[in-house]
Length: 110
Length: 112
Image 1 (cartoon, helix red, strand yellow):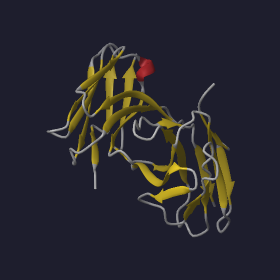
Image 2 (spheres, chains in turn green, cyan):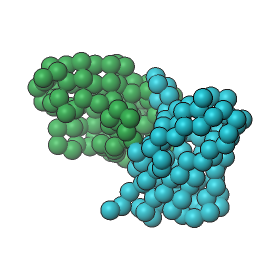
Image 3 (cartoon, chains in turn green, orange):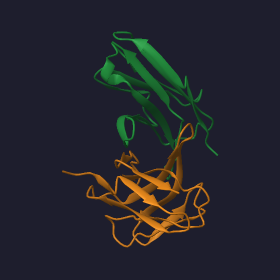
Image 4 (cartoon, chains in turn cyan, red):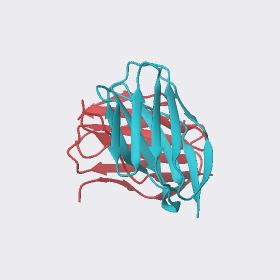
């Protein structure tokens, strides 16, 4: 069974800093990889989807990379802002199911 | 506006009662999913459906039931057999094969 781990569980950075969130998975036979943002008490908002044939995706200040051979994905956030404060979750898809990490809680301090 | 709606946002029930959570989507997605989220545990899959009138158990299906009579709707019933039903429940949908998932706003269920 696919297991997904996110490190760190919590992260606090000053505004303007660049940061990296890490996600690792145990089974490299994944179909897609997706990063989400979750605000307290809310649903998940999709940030980036990396298909299995791709190595990275970019949207604005966000860049996500995928290395299936090493079982890792990273989410890079440039020039962090207080509005980026949220929990970030990653998920690996086998095609029928998504397997989620436990999330990284990010706080950006003004 | 296309999207996924879940109702109600908050739900309170007494122990021993069944309760049904609503999930509706107008994205024309074939696949729909129910997840449970508990603090520090991430999302766990309860049930999923890839086509009308068919659904599959996820990792934690015990004590739950679903139906998929219409493409747009995938209600989840939390039965009295679910030992610890208090949680945040999230519904999602996707196009089968492309599998980028879209989520609803969630329902927080409290059972006392």
